[in-house]
Length: 88
Ligand SMILES: [Zn+2]
Image (cartoon, rainbow, N blue to C red; front, top):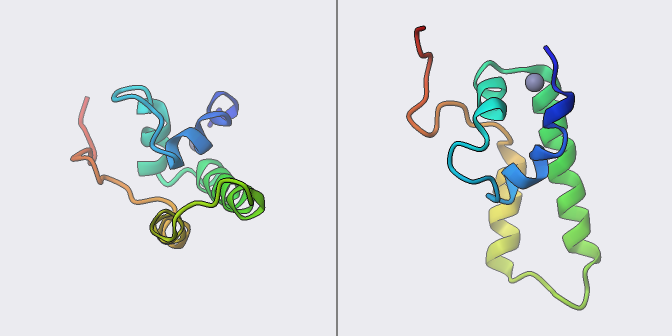
């Protein structure tokens, strides 16, 4: 499965910065449990987490942190947006 083009999207996805419809490809991979994307997403989550940790001047509020932490706990929830297996 080619995932190269999705590498930039993991962080955006975690930050909720992908516009509706924009993350179709990524969501497809995630709902297919693509190991590359799951791994990439986990790494992106970690890097975002450490980024926030090191960002002293703009301390994220605790609520944001805990929300991010819960995302770390479950990096890929498939079919959250009413997706599921769609037949062609
Ligand atoms: Zn993938």
